[in-house]
Length: 433
Length: 105
Image 1 (spheres, chains in turn yellow, brown):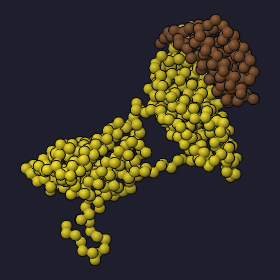
Image 2 (image 1 turned 180 degrees about the horizontal axis):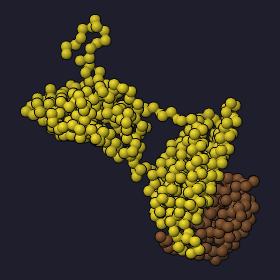
Image 3 (image 1 turned 180 degrees about the vertical axis):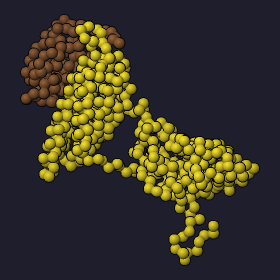
Image 4 (image 1 turned 120 degrees about the vertical axis):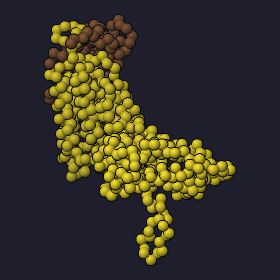
């Protein structure tokens, strides 16, 4: 679960609540608030679509707008979303209780749209959905754009005025294009998108108060090490020193109370895990004589210390025998081994960038860039090979299902057009279309 | 291109302890325990955590298990703690000594 998923779910839920109560939402009296929320929704749609389909709109002529829908559906919607929505003037209403309530709804909607846009924009661009997985996000954008058009229609019905026709035309075009795009996007399977990750510079160490937090903390440690702008050899060596006891403890856990059928296999894997600790120790030895003059990123060390504190607290409590602890130990293996790959990446980044130095032969005080023949590179390669070998023996974890429904699920067509859906039973009279 | 990094002289007893610890950190032979290698590395980290850094330590001593080198390390570090040095330096050496002793508890 990420912040973005939570934010966008709240946005969709608020939209759904408003669109299904047109008598309330359309009675708003604060035009600024309403227009701010409409703008926020448009910006959310525009930003997402531009970020996941950056090249689309270049293929579509700016005019005649909807005419391109059949050929370039997503590009057409993208083009229609380029302009901000025309501001809507609201009729003077007395500030009744229902108007107050509607205003509050619009404030909240605008707020949720801004939050969702912010958490999308601040996430790591590399983690945004790509390829087939992007269709789910396209469907989300289309659902929100379509719902926004329905809300606009409800507002205009309630507040007919001089500019209503222009607003209605713009909004209706977006609505039609969004409906079409949503239909295309949902015509195939929609694999749930991978959770967005925080941008590297926003990553922070997370607390590790209990054993349940260990897999996430190890995953975070791996990301912090991988994305650190720079780690000195001494920092990498020290991080390795704090990580090896974690590997040892996981090896102990594997053999603490294995199911009889897995006893031999687990014992073998535990021995291999301890041998992996030796491989890492060799990397630590190889990195020890090296120096760097660039600043260290302290975040991995803080995360590693938090993990070490937990491990120190648990060391004498033998917590690994109950089924839950066994599950946690198993779930921690892949992230723990991925940390080795992160160490290797950090070390090689220091060597390749010429930011790690080794003593120059025979000359005190003189240091030169670490050569690619230095023992540290061999130790890195061995550690990578060993970690990958062990990771290959572990089952791939099934991705956790998000607890949130996507906007295209929350804002289902049945929700928007209850009166225009044909009933499944042909004997029931159809509503007037 | 070479660069010049300022270093500070390493006290003799610290240098001797580091040489022994390096031998223990590299030991992977019979009777060697991973946790001893880690402990030796941790003590080295503590001793070498100085600015400006010490010059490279002596890594030419043959690898030996920590249990065999520990008396040499403890002796050297005890002499260093007793020597007339800066309090911060003595404190760091004393903490390293404590870490080493803890490894055998």
